[in-house]
Length: 61
Length: 211
Image (cartoon, rainbow over all chains, first blue to last red; front, side, top):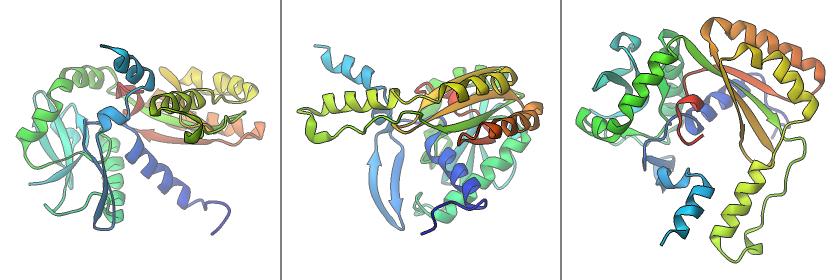
Protein backbone atom coordinates (compact mmCIF):
# COMPACT_ATOMS: atom_id res chain seq x y z
CA UNK A 1 0.00 0.00 0.00
CA UNK A 2 1.42 3.44 -0.88
CA UNK A 3 2.37 5.79 1.98
CA UNK A 4 0.70 8.81 0.47
CA UNK A 5 -2.48 9.44 -1.44
CA UNK A 6 -2.15 10.55 -5.04
CA UNK A 7 -3.54 13.86 -6.29
CA UNK A 8 -6.34 11.90 -7.97
CA UNK A 9 -7.30 9.92 -4.87
CA UNK A 10 -7.49 12.86 -2.49
CA UNK A 11 -10.39 14.76 -4.09
CA UNK A 12 -12.41 11.54 -4.37
CA UNK A 13 -11.84 10.68 -0.73
CA UNK A 14 -12.67 14.21 0.33
CA UNK A 15 -15.85 14.15 -1.75
CA UNK A 16 -16.94 10.83 -0.25
CA UNK A 17 -16.10 12.07 3.24
CA UNK A 18 -18.47 15.00 2.74
CA UNK A 19 -21.15 12.79 1.24
CA UNK A 20 -21.02 10.30 4.12
CA UNK A 21 -20.12 12.47 7.08
CA UNK A 22 -21.62 15.91 6.49
CA UNK A 23 -25.02 17.42 6.07
CA UNK A 24 -28.33 17.13 7.79
CA UNK A 25 -29.08 13.76 9.33
CA UNK A 26 -32.55 12.41 8.82
CA UNK A 27 -33.25 10.32 11.91
CA UNK A 28 -32.53 6.64 11.82
CA UNK A 29 -31.76 6.32 8.15
CA UNK A 30 -28.26 4.97 7.67
CA UNK A 31 -27.41 1.44 6.70
CA UNK A 32 -23.72 0.66 6.36
CA UNK A 33 -23.21 -2.02 3.74
CA UNK A 34 -20.38 -3.71 1.94
CA UNK A 35 -21.21 -5.34 -1.36
CA UNK A 36 -24.73 -6.68 -1.12
CA UNK A 37 -24.66 -7.20 2.63
CA UNK A 38 -26.15 -4.66 5.03
CA UNK A 39 -23.81 -4.82 7.99
CA UNK A 40 -25.09 -2.22 10.38
CA UNK A 41 -28.16 -0.09 10.86
CA UNK A 42 -27.59 3.18 12.68
CA UNK A 43 -30.17 5.21 14.52
CA UNK A 44 -28.32 8.38 13.73
CA UNK A 45 -30.47 10.68 15.80
CA UNK A 46 -29.04 8.92 18.84
CA UNK A 47 -25.53 8.21 17.64
CA UNK A 48 -24.86 11.79 16.61
CA UNK A 49 -26.29 13.41 19.70
CA UNK A 50 -23.87 15.40 21.77
CA UNK A 51 -22.53 13.17 24.54
CA UNK A 52 -23.15 15.87 27.13
CA UNK A 53 -26.79 15.94 26.07
CA UNK A 54 -26.98 12.16 26.38
CA UNK A 55 -25.54 12.38 29.89
CA UNK A 56 -28.04 15.06 30.90
CA UNK A 57 -30.89 13.00 29.52
CA UNK A 58 -29.64 9.90 31.29
CA UNK A 59 -29.67 11.69 34.65
CA UNK A 60 -33.29 12.78 34.34
CA UNK A 61 -35.68 10.74 36.53
CA UNK B 1 -40.13 5.07 -7.26
CA UNK B 2 -37.15 4.85 -4.95
CA UNK B 3 -34.52 7.50 -4.55
CA UNK B 4 -31.58 8.32 -2.37
CA UNK B 5 -32.05 11.87 -1.17
CA UNK B 6 -29.27 14.34 -1.94
CA UNK B 7 -30.48 17.70 -0.69
CA UNK B 8 -33.19 20.26 -0.01
CA UNK B 9 -33.62 23.04 -2.55
CA UNK B 10 -35.45 26.34 -2.71
CA UNK B 11 -36.61 26.19 -6.34
CA UNK B 12 -37.58 23.34 -8.64
CA UNK B 13 -35.33 24.86 -11.30
CA UNK B 14 -32.39 24.28 -8.97
CA UNK B 15 -32.64 20.59 -9.88
CA UNK B 16 -31.75 18.80 -13.08
CA UNK B 17 -31.54 15.22 -14.35
CA UNK B 18 -30.53 12.65 -13.36
CA UNK B 19 -31.81 13.94 -10.02
CA UNK B 20 -35.58 14.17 -9.67
CA UNK B 21 -37.63 16.52 -7.50
CA UNK B 22 -39.80 15.57 -4.55
CA UNK B 23 -42.00 18.51 -3.47
CA UNK B 24 -42.06 19.05 0.30
CA UNK B 25 -44.14 22.06 1.22
CA UNK B 26 -42.49 25.15 -0.26
CA UNK B 27 -39.24 23.28 -0.95
CA UNK B 28 -37.99 20.40 -3.06
CA UNK B 29 -35.88 17.41 -2.20
CA UNK B 30 -33.48 16.16 -4.85
CA UNK B 31 -33.18 12.41 -5.15
CA UNK B 32 -31.15 10.06 -7.29
CA UNK B 33 -33.24 7.19 -8.71
CA UNK B 34 -32.27 3.72 -7.55
CA UNK B 35 -33.73 0.25 -7.93
CA UNK B 36 -35.92 -1.07 -5.09
CA UNK B 37 -33.27 -3.62 -4.16
CA UNK B 38 -30.24 -1.38 -4.66
CA UNK B 39 -27.88 -1.54 -1.64
CA UNK B 40 -26.91 1.97 -0.55
CA UNK B 41 -23.36 0.90 0.22
CA UNK B 42 -22.56 0.21 -3.41
CA UNK B 43 -19.30 1.93 -4.40
CA UNK B 44 -20.44 2.97 -7.87
CA UNK B 45 -23.67 4.39 -6.49
CA UNK B 46 -21.75 6.47 -3.95
CA UNK B 47 -19.55 7.93 -6.67
CA UNK B 48 -22.51 8.68 -8.94
CA UNK B 49 -24.44 10.37 -6.14
CA UNK B 50 -21.35 12.42 -5.25
CA UNK B 51 -21.09 13.54 -8.88
CA UNK B 52 -24.76 14.55 -9.02
CA UNK B 53 -24.36 16.39 -5.75
CA UNK B 54 -21.57 18.49 -7.30
CA UNK B 55 -23.65 19.02 -10.45
CA UNK B 56 -26.56 20.33 -8.38
CA UNK B 57 -24.31 22.66 -6.42
CA UNK B 58 -23.20 24.21 -9.70
CA UNK B 59 -26.83 25.21 -10.30
CA UNK B 60 -27.67 26.60 -6.88
CA UNK B 61 -26.91 26.30 -3.20
CA UNK B 62 -28.81 23.59 -1.37
CA UNK B 63 -28.90 21.94 2.03
CA UNK B 64 -27.01 18.65 1.95
CA UNK B 65 -28.75 15.60 3.34
CA UNK B 66 -26.32 13.05 4.73
CA UNK B 67 -26.05 9.99 2.51
CA UNK B 68 -28.24 7.09 3.56
CA UNK B 69 -31.73 8.63 3.46
CA UNK B 70 -33.73 6.81 0.79
CA UNK B 71 -37.47 7.13 0.20
CA UNK B 72 -40.07 5.29 -1.82
CA UNK B 73 -42.81 7.93 -2.03
CA UNK B 74 -43.27 11.71 -1.76
CA UNK B 75 -45.51 11.14 1.24
CA UNK B 76 -42.80 9.24 3.07
CA UNK B 77 -40.27 11.95 2.27
CA UNK B 78 -42.56 14.72 3.45
CA UNK B 79 -43.41 12.92 6.68
CA UNK B 80 -39.75 12.45 7.58
CA UNK B 81 -38.64 16.04 6.96
CA UNK B 82 -41.81 17.99 7.75
CA UNK B 83 -40.45 19.39 11.00
CA UNK B 84 -37.41 20.82 9.18
CA UNK B 85 -39.05 22.53 6.21
CA UNK B 86 -39.61 25.94 7.76
CA UNK B 87 -36.06 26.13 9.10
CA UNK B 88 -34.58 24.89 5.83
CA UNK B 89 -36.49 27.49 3.85
CA UNK B 90 -35.16 30.25 6.05
CA UNK B 91 -31.58 28.95 5.69
CA UNK B 92 -31.86 28.55 1.92
CA UNK B 93 -33.18 32.08 1.50
CA UNK B 94 -30.52 33.50 3.80
CA UNK B 95 -27.60 31.63 2.18
CA UNK B 96 -28.81 31.51 -1.42
CA UNK B 97 -25.55 32.77 -2.93
CA UNK B 98 -23.22 31.07 -0.48
CA UNK B 99 -21.26 27.83 -0.31
CA UNK B 100 -19.12 26.12 2.27
CA UNK B 101 -15.37 25.51 2.22
CA UNK B 102 -13.53 23.17 4.56
CA UNK B 103 -10.03 23.39 6.02
CA UNK B 104 -8.81 20.16 7.63
CA UNK B 105 -5.79 20.34 9.92
CA UNK B 106 -4.03 17.87 12.21
CA UNK B 107 -4.19 18.59 15.95
CA UNK B 108 -1.02 20.16 17.30
CA UNK B 109 -1.15 18.00 20.43
CA UNK B 110 -3.20 14.92 19.64
CA UNK B 111 -4.88 13.53 22.73
CA UNK B 112 -4.83 9.84 23.55
CA UNK B 113 -7.75 7.69 22.51
CA UNK B 114 -9.48 6.44 25.69
CA UNK B 115 -9.29 2.73 26.34
CA UNK B 116 -12.71 1.18 26.95
CA UNK B 117 -11.17 -1.22 29.49
CA UNK B 118 -10.26 1.74 31.72
CA UNK B 119 -13.90 2.68 32.27
CA UNK B 120 -16.49 0.87 34.30
CA UNK B 121 -19.48 2.20 32.39
CA UNK B 122 -20.22 2.96 28.79
CA UNK B 123 -21.37 6.44 29.75
CA UNK B 124 -18.05 7.34 31.39
CA UNK B 125 -16.19 5.98 28.35
CA UNK B 126 -18.34 8.08 25.99
CA UNK B 127 -17.68 11.11 28.15
CA UNK B 128 -13.91 10.52 27.99
CA UNK B 129 -14.12 10.01 24.24
CA UNK B 130 -15.98 13.26 23.87
CA UNK B 131 -13.44 15.10 26.04
CA UNK B 132 -10.53 13.68 24.04
CA UNK B 133 -12.05 14.86 20.77
CA UNK B 134 -12.84 18.30 22.15
CA UNK B 135 -9.25 18.66 23.38
CA UNK B 136 -7.82 18.58 19.86
CA UNK B 137 -6.53 22.01 18.85
CA UNK B 138 -4.71 23.54 15.92
CA UNK B 139 -1.18 24.89 16.16
CA UNK B 140 -1.62 28.45 17.55
CA UNK B 141 0.61 30.06 14.93
CA UNK B 142 -1.16 28.30 12.08
CA UNK B 143 -4.50 29.24 13.58
CA UNK B 144 -3.45 32.90 13.65
CA UNK B 145 -2.48 32.65 10.00
CA UNK B 146 -5.85 31.10 9.16
CA UNK B 147 -7.62 33.86 11.05
CA UNK B 148 -5.67 36.43 9.05
CA UNK B 149 -5.97 34.89 5.58
CA UNK B 150 -9.19 32.87 5.44
CA UNK B 151 -11.67 34.01 8.04
CA UNK B 152 -11.97 37.60 6.74
CA UNK B 153 -13.37 36.12 3.49
CA UNK B 154 -16.12 34.22 5.29
CA UNK B 155 -19.59 35.25 6.44
CA UNK B 156 -19.45 32.62 9.17
CA UNK B 157 -16.87 30.15 10.37
CA UNK B 158 -16.80 27.30 12.83
CA UNK B 159 -13.95 25.20 14.25
CA UNK B 160 -15.07 21.61 14.64
CA UNK B 161 -13.10 18.90 16.43
CA UNK B 162 -13.39 15.74 14.33
CA UNK B 163 -11.41 13.22 16.36
CA UNK B 164 -8.45 13.09 18.76
CA UNK B 165 -5.99 13.89 16.00
CA UNK B 166 -7.67 16.40 13.73
CA UNK B 167 -10.04 19.28 13.48
CA UNK B 168 -11.76 21.20 10.79
CA UNK B 169 -12.66 24.77 10.00
CA UNK B 170 -15.93 25.20 8.14
CA UNK B 171 -16.27 28.46 6.25
CA UNK B 172 -19.42 29.91 4.77
CA UNK B 173 -18.54 32.18 1.86
CA UNK B 174 -20.03 33.90 -1.17
CA UNK B 175 -19.80 31.77 -4.32
CA UNK B 176 -17.82 34.49 -6.03
CA UNK B 177 -15.15 34.18 -3.32
CA UNK B 178 -14.26 30.52 -3.97
CA UNK B 179 -11.26 31.39 -6.11
CA UNK B 180 -10.19 34.02 -3.59
CA UNK B 181 -10.44 31.49 -0.78
CA UNK B 182 -8.33 28.98 -2.68
CA UNK B 183 -5.76 31.68 -3.39
CA UNK B 184 -5.73 32.59 0.30
CA UNK B 185 -5.20 28.91 1.05
CA UNK B 186 -2.04 28.99 -1.05
CA UNK B 187 -0.65 31.57 1.36
CA UNK B 188 -0.91 29.00 4.15
CA UNK B 189 1.55 26.70 2.37
CA UNK B 190 4.42 28.91 3.42
CA UNK B 191 3.79 27.96 7.03
CA UNK B 192 4.90 24.39 6.35
CA UNK B 193 1.84 23.09 8.21
CA UNK B 194 -0.18 20.19 6.84
CA UNK B 195 -3.73 21.08 5.80
CA UNK B 196 -6.38 20.34 3.22
CA UNK B 197 -8.60 23.13 1.91
CA UNK B 198 -11.54 21.86 -0.11
CA UNK B 199 -14.79 23.05 -1.60
CA UNK B 200 -17.12 24.42 -2.65
CA UNK B 201 -19.64 22.30 -0.75
CA UNK B 202 -23.37 22.72 -0.24
CA UNK B 203 -24.75 23.81 3.14
CA UNK B 204 -23.53 21.03 5.39
CA UNK B 205 -22.18 22.34 8.68
CA UNK B 206 -24.23 25.53 8.66
CA UNK B 207 -27.46 23.65 8.11
CA UNK B 208 -26.88 20.91 10.64
CA UNK B 209 -28.28 21.26 14.16
CA UNK B 210 -25.89 18.63 15.46
CA UNK B 211 -22.68 20.53 14.67
